[in-house]
View 1 (cartoon, helix red, strand yellow):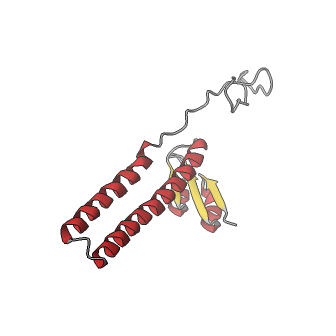
View 2 (cartoon, helix red, strand yellow):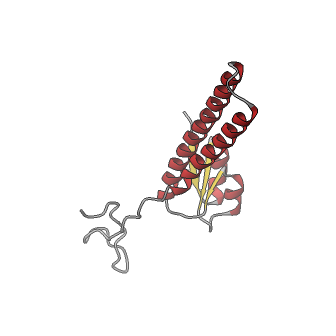
View 3 (cartoon, one colour):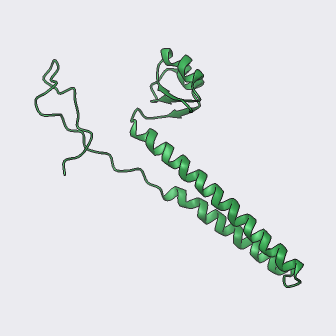
Length: 143
């Protein structure tokens, strides 16, 4: 299967280059890691990585839908023209209508908002480092 590597430092650059998909994290990451990576996320939040994958799948799905809409409308006009039912005006109207439908369908990707960020709270009493602050955080909100 495909391998993805996530890194942000100089020592990560060889692994980023060797991976099928190299992902550099953080605006403060090493320049060589960003130059080597296929994808650069300008935030160090790993939840953005999941959102990026989700948006990529959604965009691919919309592209397939838009190609199908375009091909079906072209085929319908071709069949109607061969049957002698369609004229040039109808072909133009169907073409412009399908272009608007494809554009509006593609714009639905823009309405995809990121999921709400969970509130990170220190775990009670365990894992306290120097300075008394917890090193561990809860990944899920309390219900």
